[in-house]
Length: 344
Image (tube, rainbow, N blue to C red):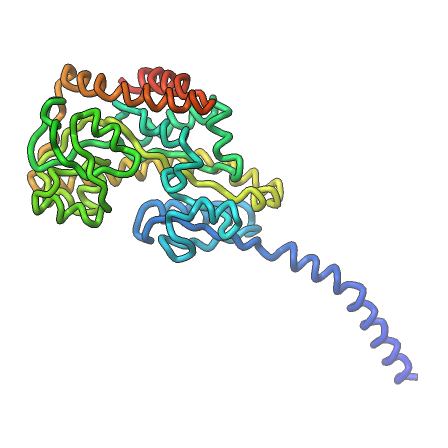
């Protein structure tokens, strides 16, 4: 009798296990976090990496562990120049890079940033960029292959040099290291843009091959270029665009509550990234001043002359966009209006 009861009990247990196993497996699958990859173009010590770490932690916590992120800094998953292409192909789920790394895809994004002059900070410039993004469908269309999380610009670009420059005429004939896409802006100043990597710039200035470089103040410290330049002409005549986006298929398969959490953090992410650009500029300024570096603010008249020289470059970019069926003129006009609105 006992033997029969034991066999019966075992059979009941077996049936229970077999019938509940699929549900247990489904429950385990549901509770297992989605593993998502983030790739960017900066080293782990850069604020971009640190902000992404904080963002990932917030998303993980606020979703109750439904997602988990692994972050891959510069070159550990894909080469920096391939970040956007890899993102839309699903090599990673979230990517951060300059829009200029995929220049053919983002002419309006890049032009929006480069046509900002007189913008005092990355925070103001990023705010203007987001307003442009929201207003113009053609601008949003450039990110049709991904879902945008953050759009920022780096701090305003200045001229950093071995000799002082206080007027437009002072830049004429200078050979200056220039980032890709910026030569027309530099030529408008009468300078001669020189293409080279930032790693080559220090030695080039030190040997007198170039007079200096153009870019945000951050490079004075991060590349130690304040050691070979003595002056910065604070002309704030363009900025550079950066994006953070998520793969479209990844975004579409996220549960609604996870999407809500991520969308709820977009403003925080954009603000922290923009603040970070301003903080590294401030660090560059402080480092340079410690070496006796002088920051020259041109007179309002001299600055207006500089901006008059640059405006035809904006007009040429706008005309080029119009020829391609894009609202270049309206975007430039809106940038000017927003600059008046936000810049005191």
